[in-house]
Length: 431
Image 1: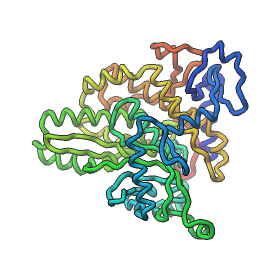
Image 2: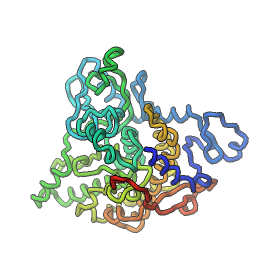
Image 3: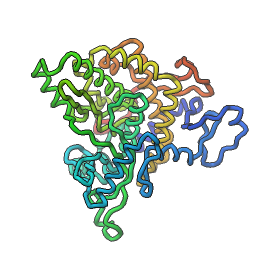
Image 4: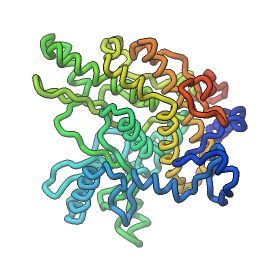
């Protein structure tokens, strides 16, 4: 952890004085900002300031509290209705149930009729969190600490990454991620430290990601194997629709730099002649602060879908045109501000003082990687490169140029450099 924090400081040191792009919800004109005085808790952004209160107001659009069981985003009425039914079910002692599959403490949430509503993932039960109820991760943390975790990711922010992936999916209009928000739930079926808390309370509120449940979907690996054995499984129109949906997922995974995409955590819904949909779930191991290819020689976490034949298909024309129109500098800046504010919601509650101290630098690096992925995506779309060709592009880091006005010329607005492999020694040769 200490090495990770030091690495973050080294990566941003050369850009620290020239790049200043803290989150801003309402950028103030330069003339007004120069005359305004920022408070001690304000964040200065290119001459403007944003208070912690304003950051929390934005976060409240995507996160609930233990006293406010709804998000304030006006477009999330369906989410609030779903969450309300889940809370009524918990009050009626219909508790969430632990999902046996996977490496984290994930729970199915039900309504009062026993129907699945959502999947809840508490932040203290994530794959690398101390409260993880799965025994394999416990033994890995105790007996194989040198191989524990992913050096390119900030520990235990998977619940934020899940929500951020849903936000990007909505902003880019990809529609492949089930709506995900941050909520607080309380249930005796969660994994609590009962040896201590039984003297205080049988349970307490846990914060985590709450993803709406999608029904009628199957794991992609299973469906693809069936299609391989049946050449007539898809009509030409269904195949075209599937490729377009698949490319939407490729865009999402590439932008968020998902390090855990395999055939078991993206789903397909196929009703012959009626419906064809894709759902990209399990996006928690995303948003690295350093490119995986430049963090480790042995663990680069490639995209599993890049080896599929359909990854070599050309981009869908309508999808390509829509993304090129949407990926403007204004859109990218707004998206980065939103995601950055969301990641500020994380507050370490353990002894990880190095990570807590360097959190602003780590988030800054996350945004550099995110912009770099969007930069490469835009180039791939302009050059009409396939998704398989896109993932082979050189990983880059992109920072905003200071005091540059918004324009359509990306090279004048951003500063680009290639990501380089970090030379560091690890006695176990795993990092």
